[in-house]
Length: 234
Image (cartoon, rainbow, N blue to C red; front, top):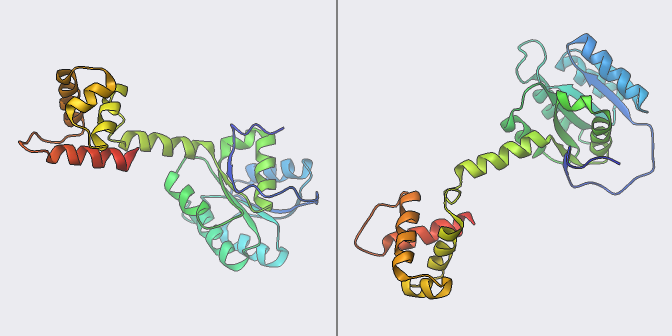
């Protein structure tokens, strides 16, 4: 069985009858390309074409109508986003063809730009190919219309959210106090609910305001802003 901790997927389709999937491999490094083609052949796929650049890839796709294309994100002539550009073109010209983009380096922006274009698309780090079971499963899932996302992308998104979360630096008690503030409770009401003194509540509120970077004022405006911040980020 595939370890679902290693490959994160969305929209897995229902199991379909097994068939020999036709795949095209696009990679300018001939040794890596031949290695991928050999791996795919050994694991039950039919490799119907190989390409070393985006133009050749698009020509093969038009001729062979493969089930899935496996393409490096960087190919000649500029070695920047040729693979991604080819994936966009394939999506427009042959929407039934799944596309798995491989990248040597994690690029969350490119990954999200790709996989949000529809079903049957995927983005994996090349290091993931070393786990043959995961790689083969990813190609099969994409052929069925699933979206495959490298877990490194997911981890980066989670970490980014944590870094940008204004509530992340609050203690659990400060979160409780802020949650009750968002309900409109007074300091005394918060104290009664949490079984702490009003002075302790005030101490927690001062800490919350400081951590949320809300300047000290003589009115209740800060409490409103703090409550809005809580509701927007919980």
